[in-house]
Image (cartoon, rainbow, N blue to C red; front, side, top):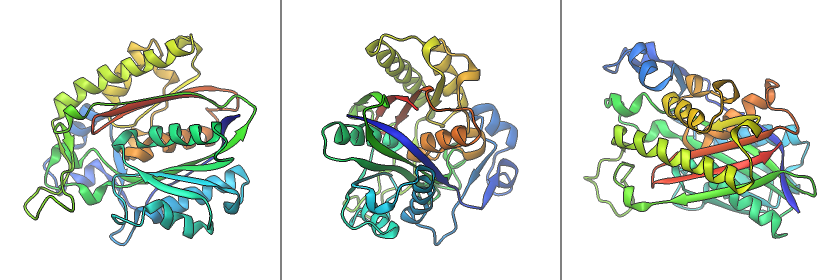
Length: 317
């Protein structure tokens, strides 16, 4: 059996913070942010929002799109670095919200690569016969882990959630996934606050931007080449590239190295900023709903995040 994406859905908080609005409280400007990142705005959740709540709205939209009842789901994997609690997992809170009481449900933490990691895990569950219908969701409240006085990080991120529904099928679907990590780069991009870190640890995103940029471009080029080589394809064979929406310069460099024109790349970073594990499924849902990504298209998704983690998924829609 293969696993195939049969539905997608998303949720973005109503509050949109433009670069101009942000520059009223942060020492930055619209032009400065756009030149370095491609970001024009981001969605920021209300103070009472939860990661599970964002995920709920995205999952219900995906279930409706797939015409699947929540009780038919037997696996829920939620990728996040901003969980509601240490435990129970945010996935189990989500499970209760959607009215499911039997699906295996758990969180994974792989930073911005979280959705790709979760998709790979769910794909293997289905191929092993352990699940027939699965939900994979990325949901993040990154506004809660940002220092709003640090212009090098707070301009980069936004809140949001998106989900896909997978189904076991004999049709071609997820063709391959490739997952990697290297913990030796742990200090270049991190949030170090934890239950054991003590009260004096800086509780927000820390990033050495230039070094992260350099490694991201290299690793993403390598993962794209690894994926294409594994299935004996070239960039010309790919209908759409959906990269993690972190920085337009990184995304453009990756596409160029892979020999894919800009026109084949789905871009939402300008409107969503970096929503970490939610960014790729958000971009996928946007591109499906506006008619660009169609059934039968060959889509390459790739991501890079803190850890470092990186990975790809090649999918026949």
